[in-house]
Image (tube, rainbow, N blue to C red):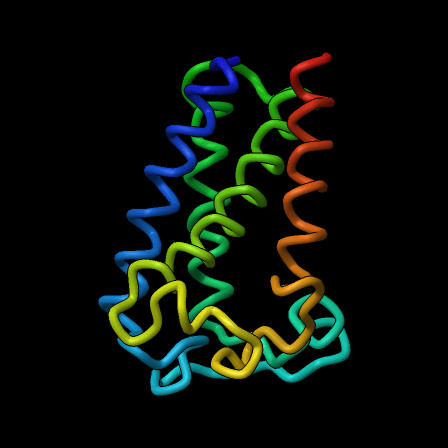
Length: 149
């Protein structure tokens, strides 16, 4: 297992690159608002995301998860510890990537990181999207379990 500092640095790097890529693809129109992608408006998508999920975002999430599992195929066999680590990393990556999308995006920036400017984050708590309040503790728990194993 990498040190926690190395993990955080790597996650910031991958999340930052992912955010920059999504800014290039989406521009100022978050949640793929202007992309020709299918939208799934289901009870599950509303429960998890608060809004319909796009095929674009499903593919992006699946890509990150697939790449994160690569070491289990080429370096060492799959274990529960590795899966906890991958899931913790992925959740942390998605939370950081989401915030960095706003921070790096010239159409937003941190000043416009508000509920009024971001329709696709429909649930907020104490000035942050609820997904951050649930995702970061979940990632922390999964990583703690992975490091304890």
